[in-house]
Structures are given as C-alpha cells and as structure tokens.
Length: 346
Image (tube, rainbow, N blue to C red):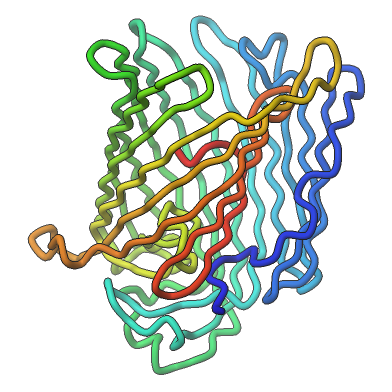
C-alpha cells in the first residue's frame, strides 16, 4: 500500500481539551512515515464571534526530521467589521516534486527543502445581509534548497528558487445564498510583486448544503482556480492540486497547472456529542466523500476524461471555543491518502 499524504499514520490526533479559564489547549501528536513524530498543539482564547475584546489563536508543531509549522492569529472588532492579523513560519523537509502537468508517474519524483514565511493583515465586513467582503495585504518569503532529482527539475515552469520577498493586496467575497439553495458563492483575487517578478491568482467556488435532518447533511462544492505569471512565481507558491488542496487521495501538489478544476461531494453525519462543561461540548461526526480534479495550462485543454478521482471516509471533531479537527482517509488509483487539518474542507 502506498501512502499519499504528508501525515500518513495518525497515532493520536486529539488528546484533551483543557479549559484554562478563557483559554483552550488542544495537544496534537501524530506520525509520518517520511517526517517522523509530530508534536504540537492548538491554543485559542475567545475564538468565537464577536471576538470581543479580541480573539487569539495559534497552531504550532514540529516533526522529528526538523519540519516546523507555526501560525499565531489575532482577531478584534473594528467599526462594523473585523481585523485579522496573522503570521506564519514553515520549514518543509523532503518535499516531493512530481513534475508539471496533469499526468506524470507518482513513483517518480524529486525532493527539496523549503523555508516559508508570510505576514498578513485583513479587514472583514458585511455590506449587506449574507455578503462578507475581506481585503488586505499579504507579504511572502520563500527559499528552496537541497534539491535532488535533476531530471524532473527541467519540467519546472519557474526558475525562482532563491530567497525572494513579495507583497501585494488581496480581496475575497463570500455570499451566503439561503434562497433557493442553502450554500454560498465565493470569489477571490490576489497579486504579488517583488524585485523583477509579478504573479497573481483568481478563484471562484460554489458550495451547496442540503440538510435532510438535524444530523445529516449532503454537501457539494465546485471550484475553479487560475494562476497568472507562472514563470516568475517563486517555486513554493506555484499552483498545484493534491491532497492538502482538496484532492484527498493524492500526494500534496501532485499535479501542477495554470488552471485547476475541483469538485467535492460529502455526506456529513453527526454521531454523538460529549459535554466538556456546562458551556462547551464536542460533536463527533462521520463523513463519506468523493473528489474529482484536474489541472491544465490552458482552459481548452480540460476534458471530462482528464479528471482524477478518489473517495473515502473521515471524522470531524468540533473543538470547544470554535473550529473543528478534520481527519480524512481517501483511496485513489495511486494509493491511500490521509489528510488532517483544522476546519471543514469547504
């Protein structure tokens, strides 16, 4: 059996929820066959709307191979909206590069290490009922090093591997549409500029939720992404499709292209709840799902027979103080993918 995700064997993903007055602590422990043991956790304080006077959250973990992730986030209301400030730091070791395009051999790959930092500030507001607009500034930095497997690097559409800083604005809108269907339409655009480089990306999505009872909800999402300026995009931020981006039965960044089409279908079933205290409870749910996705350099290259498919089951655990823990197991023609993250996929 071939495992196709960053986290491949989960020993313990949720140990306890410790209410320390307004603080919540969620330890995380897992194991990856490529990165070793993961030790980390999530800390949150008042991460429930309206976030008054502020909400603070942070997720951090480290693998025994030296891979690191840390992301603190601060939220506070201002005027009729919400300000969000965040910073991220990541060191990735032995990351796989499968080449460029919608095909390729999943057993033929190059490896590299990367260091990534990002800083962002945004303002979210609701100009009308159901519509949320967010906009702000994103600053990014990346360095790619220790590249191996020279044969595949010739397929890379960019030569930007060194230490590069870029910055630029972004905007995103999300419109909830309870009339006719229960779901949302979202769209976003961002642009990054640096020394002699410029690239941008746009995306739009439609999600539909059709609850048949208080505990059972079928859900569907379609998503289209477009990347512009691939040749001058730092390698770490190239457009890709894979396990962490919604094609859950495949490796992260398994396919690369300027256009990405993705569809996700889920059946969400709440199983039971566990009371933590008189104000907090944890909901446990099961999810059955299927994914379909493809990439292309030009939109007219997309075909029905080019979609990559997977299917599987997962678990959701709602966290006291807001948010949820997601674990998905997906089977594809390339093996078993296991994905773990915070929040629903859509």
